[in-house]
Length: 142
Image (cartoon, rainbow, N blue to C red):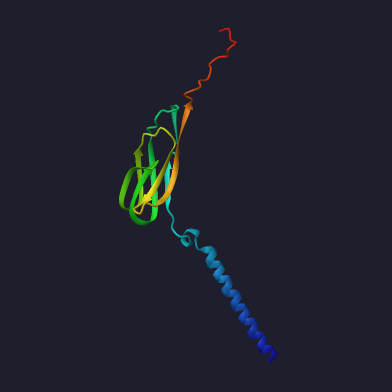
């Protein structure tokens, strides 16, 4: 009788280990994206615009890409000013030309005025407006 009970106990323990192993395998085989909840993706490229002098405007085209989990009305704002809106969209990929003088924070805002995502486009100057590099040393004879 004792042997019979021991065999049943070991069989149950074996089933539990097998089930645990199968669940673990399923967890590792499922891609992470399938388990994660969808999130908003927002990018503007290039993220840095180089101008000749400080204070000059950047007039380069910027590639705007965004994707949200919900179809709704969204607007793009740059430094708290509305730039463009889209109706009933879930994803957008567009090229827009902006005249930017300073680094600008772009925000994607939904129809309830909630900031969904944001990114920054920096404006850098190749040469400073106030300082100019000398082409030769002060003590040069030529």
